[in-house]
Length: 77
Ligand code: SF4
Image 1 (tube, rainbow, N blue to C red):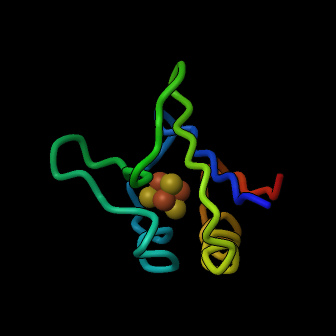
Image 2 (cartoon, helix red, strand yellow; image 1 turned 90 degrees about the vertical axis):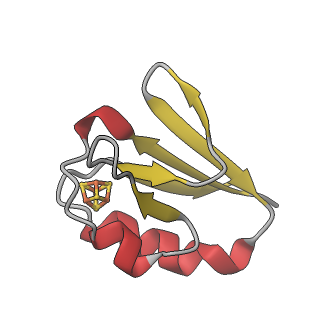
């Protein structure tokens, strides 16, 4: 079982809510003011992190719930 988190980064408005909800997963970039999904890989503007750390599901889902741009997706595979 893996946790898969996806961020549609170009639409990030830099509000920092996801960082507050899940500091192990997100960090604000000082370069462009958008959030970084840590340890993720990029494909056409979508950043994806696959991790066996199921303990991160709850903070990830809280981040997704709080995100005003609705650009964070969380699922188990
Ligand atoms: S909560 Fe959403 S809009 Fe706000 S910084 Fe995180 S990804 Fe960007």
